[in-house]
Length: 123
Image (cartoon, rainbow, N blue to C red; front, side, top):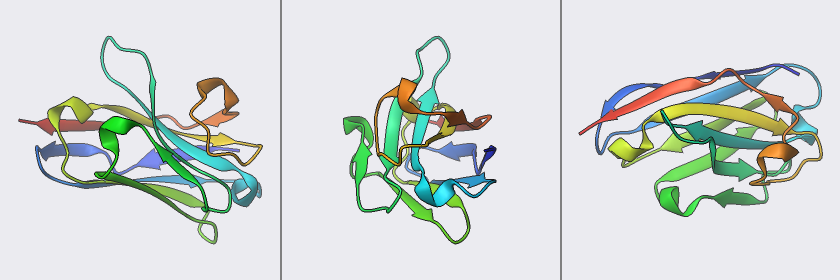
């Protein structure tokens, strides 16, 4: 399974971006999907996750009400809509796939990772 993240960029505080993660292979519809991020000098942290059916989602508290994770199983793609962006959202964002189909926060549960896309929010 290969994951390709895109959609990052430079945006002013208060702006919006939509990240996409396109996947190859036939396992997407059975996989839970997650987004993580890593800022310079910090550990990679959980951002959002969605179960394989899309019926269950989870978010880190700092993005609740601003970010929305969704998926299109017909397009083998997961999205992260990011609104009201803040400078502290600046990081490299990674998508990941959990072969067990869960919406999990656990880094070690994910089996496949994308290469990351840079999001920079200016103040």
